Image 1: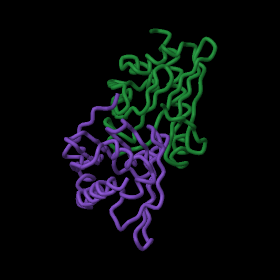
Image 2: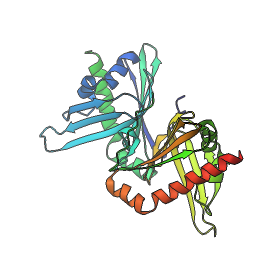
Image 3: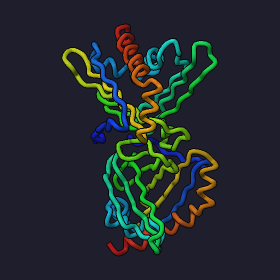
Length: 159
Length: 159
């Protein structure tokens, strides 16, 4: 059974969108590396590599690169909860195999719910405390995650 | 499916014991708060409170107290993987609901395997790097976790 997830507005940040696509298609776009590479970082940043081992404890890696190639963010996360077409949870507090990481920041929860002919897409970032949450908001959470959701909506029209 | 767990000797510490008890009994001792309180910290330290929400994402809390009550360690961990009578995995890198914690140190994996009339008990502490592993060893991992395993072996004879 999946853990019943309840975001805490003092600690968590949530972005919601209604997307004009069936959730099975969104799920594919979220869980297949060749798809993830096309939308998962705000352009013009690029994802140059993506690895997915889709099971609890498995690796979710994305290597992001700035347009001028001077900045690289090679991010290794661990999947925690996977409910096909419904919910995907991963964290950077753990590496694959549940190993504690050196740089814990968020746990991400993406949920997909049928909504008319489309899908209600809800993306939540879970933080350890209010200071981390507020810092993430100031860093541009809504702009960044919103852009990524828009890119997902555009990309799924092409697959 | 459970993640196939492979300890890395450079990063992880493992304690093995053959215990003279069936694994179903050990599992009960490990997963019911009234039992956990009796053996899970080296005496004469006490566990004064224990909460268990036995599901992935659920709380594993133990409040440990020194004999003179001057030191208290109230530890909130998150269960990650639960295979009844076989494997129990939790971490202090996450709080319940998969929230990143402020003080990540280890992920613990306890595995139970039938071994003759008894059980092979294997307890592994997974660390983020070799320095943390080595520090844990110097802090007395083998003495502490060994004492706890001995206390478990003694305690299950009484239930």
